[in-house]
Amino acid sequence: MPDGVQPWKLTMTNPQQINGQADDAAAMRADAASAYSLSRAMLDGAQANAATEYALHFGEPGFTNPSGMYIDQHYEGYSGADQQVWRELYRRQHDHLEAHASEVWLRGARAIGLGPDAIPDLRIINTNLRRLTGWQSRAVPGYISARPFFACLAQREFPTTVFIRTKERIDYLPEPDIFHDVFGHVPLHADPSFADFLQEYGQAALVADAQHTERLARLFWYTVEFGLIRERGALRVYGAGLISSPGESRHCLVSTDVDRRPFDLHEACSTPFEIDHYQPTLFVLDSFDELRDAMRTYAAVVRESAIAPVSGAHT
Figure 1 (cartoon, one colour):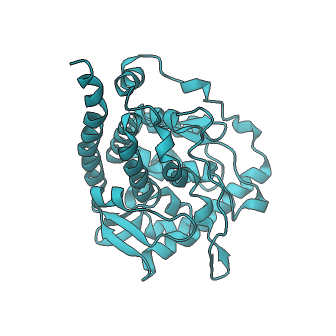
Figure 2: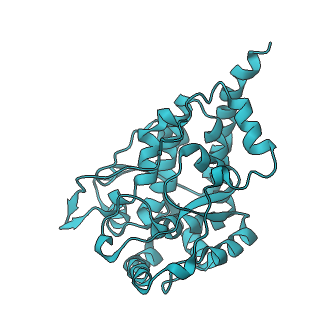
Figure 3: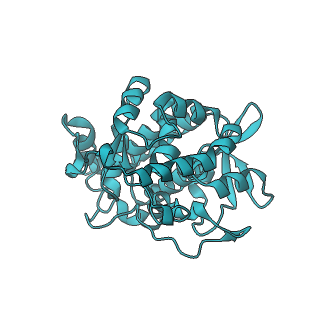
């Protein structure tokens, strides 16, 4: 993929107005949405180099800072105004999520030390994550291209944007910030089944051909970003785009306009998504074990289709 392409960047326009409030979820979708819009560019030339890429990312020690992109969080640099924005964002979602977020997400948030009073310190988050699942959140200065992103997932590292939006932009942001990345995504990394799923996803995405890349982009959208799960008979949210969105986290659970389908990996991978309004279709898991097992099966198919042509060229 060309280094200049940044598949997690997308400027959202025309947010839907619902009850007079801007669709804040649209502003949070930059990472997943652009995975789809630029999916065909993500792995340009990957099929011909699949075996080489696989060896690079999984066979060589010391692959610890792809392209030198990791930075320090510089936690002491957050201002009092920054901390106040975090407290306000957390306050908006807390009570609703206590009642309607996945129990796995809620346990994870407590386990990693997520709290209402201060922006997360990644040093503390990572101490807890490494103990639980071996994952880490790694600070990055902003957007990164798809291949390094997938390489990070493949080795249990989550690239995390560390800036936080300003008070003036608290309701609308055209790219992910630390609230979306850490509050939305990271609590699930404390769950062994979801942690295994996400690593399998990254490994498969690294070697996927163009067709599988597009399918994987849709899977990311309908699980990591906009996934629902049924726990103890109750429908709950777990996708980061829902967790971090006051509007859509409510809409997705009660609206009769939403088609909530039992999760099927093939169907999710085949269903186009929309980026400029609330989602009309969502998929409901029974458990994160189900997601992990489905991904393992699909990852084997992706690897076989990517590496077989390279191997065949030598026979």
